[in-house]
Image 1 (tube, rainbow, N blue to C red):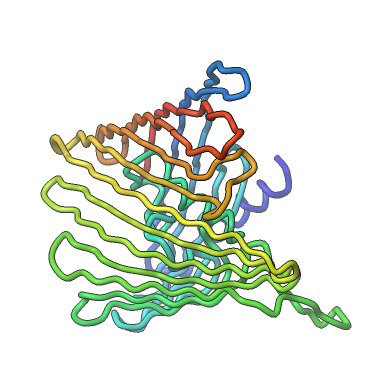
Image 2: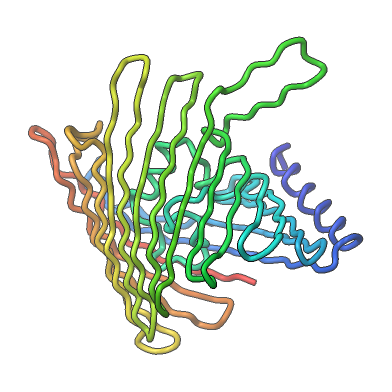
Length: 341
């Protein structure tokens, strides 16, 4: 076992042991997602297939008091160890709470603000995944501090965070050093939501960050509308972003959205369709010659029991190509076998 895997395992064991001694209550959750994928291989016109342990998670939440909760979540995603979450919640009242540590930034609801175990489809929409990559966020998370709360009789929610501009950017001055160096920019993000009537969820967000060492500035904003009630699952979301390279006075503008509809045929089976699009460069194309990615997803979820779920998805990918580039062959069929506790 390498050092990183050993560190994650050691932290989880220590945190769990500490929790048993000092905490009022301990909650342990686990998630395993095993995938089978069958996808077109664009390089040779054939198909590739295989299995992977896509997500293996262990989450420990320790309740030190009614208003103080510590969380640590480790992972072995894609056979690589990692520390997903590590944060402390200070719950003063419904209207005002503070979170400090590493956690999901307050942006698109379709990021890890929607837990991986509760995804409608096997994967999140393409623009959501690309947004995290373009902003330097690992698992949609970074280190920082957030204030949040529910107001107006819980009909509205707000969250505001300041943190590191990228997940990997850390600043650790120490008395052992004569001088220190770090970033002079921060990640700043905020999200607001309204819950006007039962089943309806409306909101928007905005984020901005600057990485001083590379002179890169990121700005994004977006909005969503969800309606989930009586077996109907309708969701729509839009995102627009800009990546500015200050040193060269250039920028990349990108945007994306999805429309999703699902219906529960009974308590166990849900059928879904989704259209999502991502434009990597509004006035151009990416290195593959794609001006816009168009993904048509068809899904079927089967909730075998409370702890076990099966998902099958087929994604038809139909890109809008720039002149001179050939169409990509990249349709995907997935199966996700999920169990959780």
